[in-house]
Length: 245
Image (cartoon, rainbow, N blue to C red; front, side, top):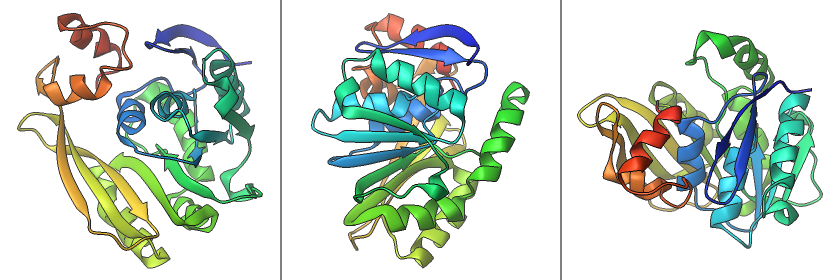
């Protein structure tokens, strides 16, 4: 059974958390708020189910399947789905992505994949997950499961982006979108959101900054997340400190 922690409350749903499962974090919030999806959607490595819930809120016609190899995560995500108003459009499977064999293709696959930039308290969880799903496997399996017009959307450390893109292009993907995510105004590039499509479309490149100054979220970030956090105005930035990068 997952060990409970304090829940994280959003406007339309609540995330129960566990010490055995990755907690709500900035990367997941960014992916859930930035990714544009439709139709059948698969989330790989759902954890608490945060990203799937955010997408379900944003896209009322989407049907979302979330998977996780960790039974604790799958159970926790199932609980969070059942307690949400989107339960009829969400499903969760405790399965290895490599073993997934659905009866239909997906229009979008989204993932906040594991990598080794984390705090010590969660390194054991991370090590287990990364052994089970490396980037080349995520890319090749996603390509096989996507519809002819489908796309893979991920958020990864900027240091990993060049290699990820290179592998995806070799697989047959095209880079449709890249978002350069900076932790703070004037600071170093921290993350990239990548959308890799089976369609050969022009690449769109944009920049995004999380904080305008230390502990002060940027207008971009506050605008992006305004439909999720229950607070408003000046109190919003303070409340989001719980998941600051």
